[in-house]
Length: 192
Image (cartoon, rainbow, N blue to C red; front, side, top):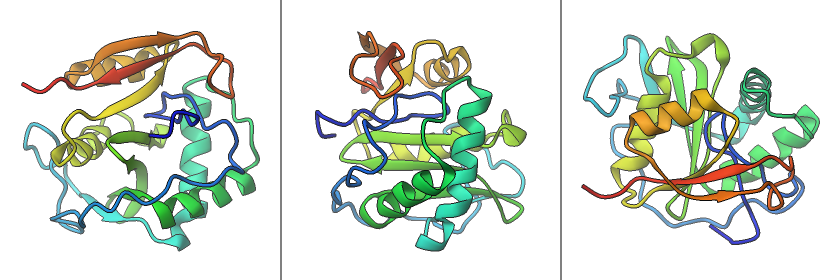
């Protein structure tokens, strides 16, 4: 992850310094196996009706709506308009690995991977606690040893989620490096 960009993780992260900044450069990872098939969470469970698929540019508006609602539900300020977020996500879809989780064909959350970083993981609040975050995190971790992410320190729900999946706090930030000015935590998943 570029040192100048700190981004969202879960409904729990520091956002990029500016959504008008260029999206991360492509990371060159191979396509993910099993796309469009029933998603597995990290315990191997198949949540009913849940599938994962890569995002396409036409998904940017839907992902922007999920992004904004997830942030609202976690008391993270939405500093940018839906249009600005949609433009940012359109660039992100074109330049990063973006996976959408659909429940019964309806997008319910998404995750963005870039160079070993989980840049974003947002779940629409109507779909919390249904295995969607676990399935997206399992996808992100599958081929990404040493996965890292940022989480806002006040987002207890997201922090508990990541810790329940083995994340540990690597460092703490005072908010001076993120657009929201909120304290954040750098999390990582140590290799077993």
